[in-house]
Length: 551
Image (cartoon, rainbow, N blue to C red; front, side, top):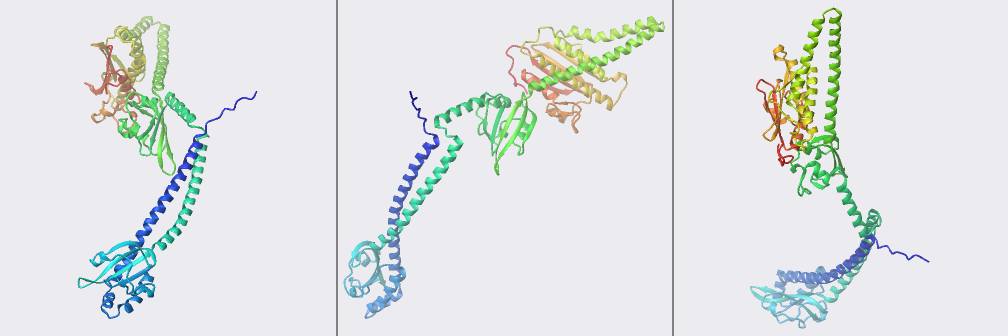
């Protein structure tokens, strides 16, 4: 049994070809008919204009006026009228007296006969035109008065026969039909080529298949987690997917808006509008770190830019945690080395028979090592913060900087809400302490002081009045007043020329991002004894302000 053949709908290109072919044929036929009618009217108008010009020129000629006054006007006017007729291409030029008796005619035998046509308006001094049947057949003619001293002394009529006009139109009609057929052939060929290209680009799909593909395209575009942004040649947004809106913090209708009007950071705006490509550039938004890649679309001129965005926030946070772990490991290694040195000293004292000095040395070292640990554990019951402070104290000591815990520090266990991630606390406090240690150590190297001015960093962690206060103060070089607004910008660093002696590139920028994600604020000011003081306030209440509520 033969399976019934399923008829596939015609492709979109095929349907368009059929429709365009009929449309081109109808347009060409309509244009041809309109051109024929217009040409006929234009031919008659042109003929009327030509005979009017010829008659008016004859009527205004001084020689005509002189001939009219002569005893035999026909003898003087007939050669002149025939010369004008040949030169202007009209079929007749007739000059007559006011009674309508001809003085000139293309057929000399008709001279002296009455003029066939109307002359009344011309006798009253007004030129007029009409279509009238005379001795040469139907013609388009004009009658113009010849005046002498304000009196009509003669009449001039010039005309072109309708037969001559029709012959001219028939000649034009042949050209018109040729042009129409050529236009039809060119239109058909152009339509075929256009639809062949359309069929090639649409792969022979019909409208339903194209619609389905568009739906799949839209679904895929908005499903991918990588941000996609397309800009036109004027740096306006032509397309943006959901991930792109989220990564850039866009809301509302943004398609058609210029990039520089979106309120993005200047460095990111510059990267998006750059003429050349950008590869794996790291930029900061209000609360994210994004990796930007741009590729201009050009074809002899700039047509737009394709931008891809990747979220680098989590990876950067993990890198920061890894750096902290590496720092802790380095501190443990250094402490192990110091412990070995101290153990050798104790063993040597015992071997020398100085047991009392050995006990005194060990006791002093234990008390010194345990003092900060007891202080941190007593004041900070939150395990993540306590571990971070102890680790950073060891790191600071390796840099010759003393980490001091402020007496006001107090955080009870379980006080921090579940919505405040431990990772963000590590990011904020860890980067601020690292920043302070670097600044204090650098200032100590630049301007060394005695033991009473040992570089130090003071940390305050306090939870009360519905907020968590994190404050880090150092005795480094401080922050220049003109750099206060720049310290949280990406790339601001002590290593950068011309900047104030604070900052760790991305570190302070990450501090502000983490604070804003949790509805907090970050402030920087000068420390009372010199140096800088960074203060972070994070809300602990339920229903605190949303992420990004503070600058």
